[in-house]
Image (cartoon, rainbow, N blue to C red; front, side, top):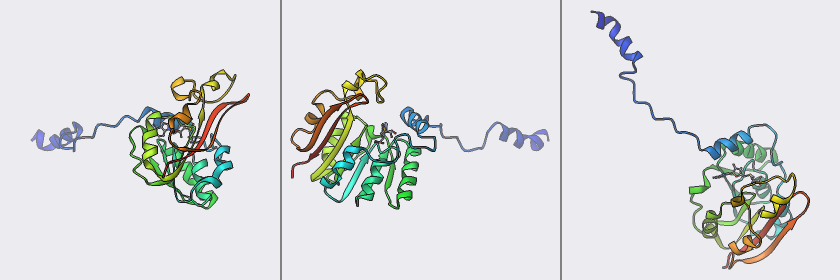
Length: 215
Ligand SMILES: C[S@@+](CC[C@H](N)C(=O)[O-])C[C@H]1O[C@@H](n2cnc3c(N)ncnc32)[C@H](O)[C@@H]1O
């Protein structure tokens, strides 16, 4: 009698009969950090592309472009405005939402892909252009080379170790995320170098490379 009346309530309260709950996935710490960084409505890195990309866009073969670690989309959207069909990959869905908003604001479309580049397959001979701006993950280099079509071009810019010596400079403090002198060029050994520089001023030290995969 007691069970007939109160048993079902008791079982429900104890969670019996309810489907087992999936264990909650803990968010990737990098994703959580970047989502938080991009959570304000303003664009942390601005809406205009990296100057090196803007200056050299005419050298890029038209077609499909992949923007790695695209963030809030300033470079991906610029490529789309210049006639490229753009895939933009980043670990931060919050950043990518802003990238989509920027694309809409500029009247273009980009395809956004939220993924961790530590284990993301870029495909094989898929892109005319791959841009990798202000994100250094050395393990990506073989994947970038494979994903470029023959004759495709990589656009790369990243802080160098010299950046650590500039008072108040932005950028990573961990040496693993900074390029050594000449390293960027060496990473793309065998590619035809179209533009390459290592510069340092009172704001930043960076290396830039535009290089073509052999046909
Ligand atoms: C310094 S921001 C540069 C963003 C963009 N390239 C630009 O120039 O504005 C670095 C970007 O790397 C992304 N990122 C960090 N770790 C990542 C990972 N493991 N996979 C994919 N993206 C990642 C961050 O979300 C962030 O958007």
